[in-house]
Length: 82
Image (cartoon, rainbow, N blue to C red; front, side, top):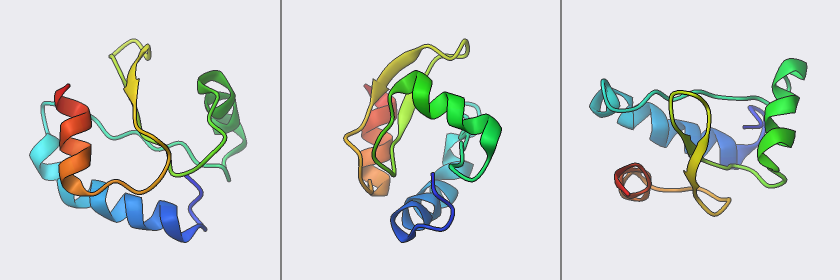
């Protein structure tokens, strides 16, 4: 996420609202464009557009990803349940 970008801020609000219902099912991990060590993650997953949600397993292997853009709560839930 770009913490200074409005689309990423809006997506983060949706994720914060969902966080309590995701406990024990999923962990939200944020990687920021403003954190130098996080930039390798963007490269690893080929992320060029934000916001971007990627679902991984516990080992960090990609399982699925959403089309870049803001997802509402129902879309995030659907992404997690596939």
